[in-house]
Image 1 (cartoon, rainbow, N blue to C red):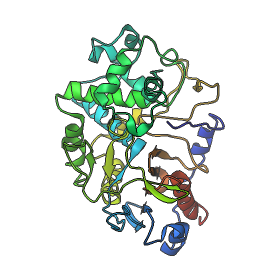
Image 2: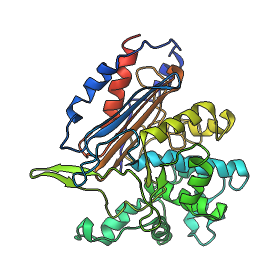
Image 3: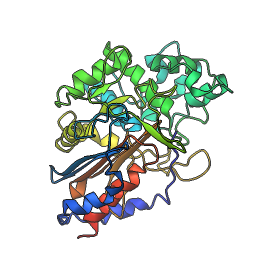
Image 4: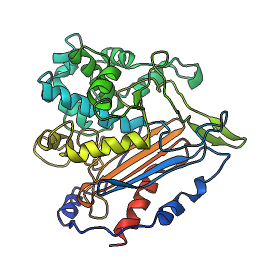
Length: 374
């Protein structure tokens, strides 16, 4: 579970003042210096991609995919994206809206008539925006398996999450009145994609997104059903050294975090977003419009703090006055980040298979090299 706090809704003003001045070129060595700690033939590491003006200007892997095979991380190494998956889940929903099979104002009970009555107040738009108020399935599991170590808890899948939510009787807050990051919401969205498309969520992603874009190594991983080729495994540093921490009880869910992909395939994804290959600019507008309260005011989080600006699978808070679409992923053994600066035609992606890495901060440090060179 990720928590986010921002300083104020007025940050939108900074976006309006951001000029579209061309950024200076940054030497590859300057970028490489930021990742020098990962240059090791004995440790897990990370992969870094910088795209400027539609072209990759830095693409590098560091460290090992795992400590058993000692394979080196490269541009084709596939990492578990964790919450970066949510932009693909959102895109799947948007494609079904394009097809006329879903509408953003459809209610949860319109798609799942057997869902409890509290689902009548929850719209697809609210699920996408993290304003549904659904109870976190991880919190439900924590109570259900209290006192049991995670490695003894069976992995839950998306359908199992939906069943847990059907056992609840209410939301944490009135839908649309507050903001709270919701893995439950994006698992439910994946199940909606299955229900309305008539195919598994992974097959829908493959047929409608990955294959059309040539993302041949990308997969929504389902143990026993498919494989992740050239796979990085997650690691955590302990007092005794590295421990492979690749899976947890919640690592089998797909809609909130189950996609594996590489730098090479994310370059294709970034290009498709820039060129509106899958969805038109008009169709993308809802995804890049932050959620607000019914009266148009900024949303608050349940703890009373101001909510981040969030669209459909994208955080929209600007950075140093630059318009930004971003997301971060954090799961056992993996840390990931994508930062897209559309006005600057700059994208930075960091994928790591070691738990102590601050992937968002590293991505921002790369962006700083360009912004400070202006």
